Length: 136
Ligand code: TYD
Image 1 (cartoon, rainbow, N blue to C red):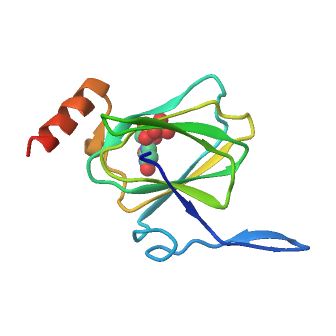
Image 2: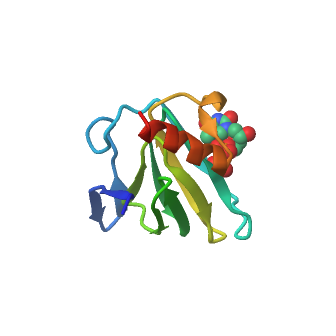
């Protein structure tokens, strides 16, 4: 299994539930960027890329979705439906997100600013990149 789920502490009382996330503590990097995805179309998958120099933690704040993680050798699918769990996505993981519920909200924490040049958006290029890395 290549996915790593990070469990956050949920502080619950009669008023509601609170989850706090601290960069470098509850997740394994300092947070430089946060983005969130809303108004997802259940029939339009997203992702289809990897990053060579980016760590992220993906949290489904509301609703649910499925995330496929692929390291070039193994493919796993994870259901995200718990706002107190974060899916760690390290470097060189091809990801595909799909099966969003219509209320789905995804929050992503990242350790780098947005950099379009860090994306690999073609699966064959991703496989070539993984092969070149394993060849040294
Ligand atoms: P993209 O990373 O392709 O989204 P997904 O992986 O969910 O399919 O990003 C969608 C668009 O948003 C694309 O035009 C790039 C832009 N974008 C930013 O400007 N800043 C960001 O931090 C991110 C993640 C995306």
